Image (cartoon, rainbow, N blue to C red; front, side):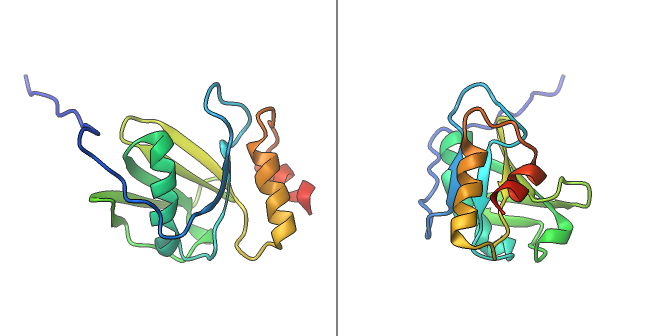
Length: 149
C-alpha cells in the first residue's frame, strides 16, 4: 500500500496583499446563492490581479491551490504562479460560468466570486459588490450584474 501525502498548513504564512482587492464576501457559514461574494479587479490582467486576491482569500480558505477562470474574459496568465512561497495553478476554461472566478484551497474549500468588469463605474460596482455579498442573496450572476445597471 502506498502511503498518502497530506498537505499541511503548519508553519505556512501568506504574505499580505500589495494592494487591497476590491472584494466583498458573504459571511462564513451555510452557503446561500450562486456566488460567495464579488470581486472588482483593477484590470483584465489576471496574472497581476491574482496575488492580492489569493492573499486575502487565504484567510478564509487556507493555502490556495487553484484559481479557475473563464478564458475569454482575461488576458491569459501563466498556468502556474509562485504566490506566498508556493505554486498556485491557474486554469482557464471555456465552460467556466461567465463573470465568475473560482478559488480553491488545499483542503477543498472554495469560493466562487462574481467578477465585476474592471471598467465598471465605481457606484455601479459598489452596488454589485454589496448585493452579491448580502447573506440572503440567491440571484444569478447575470441578475446581479443587470440589477445594478
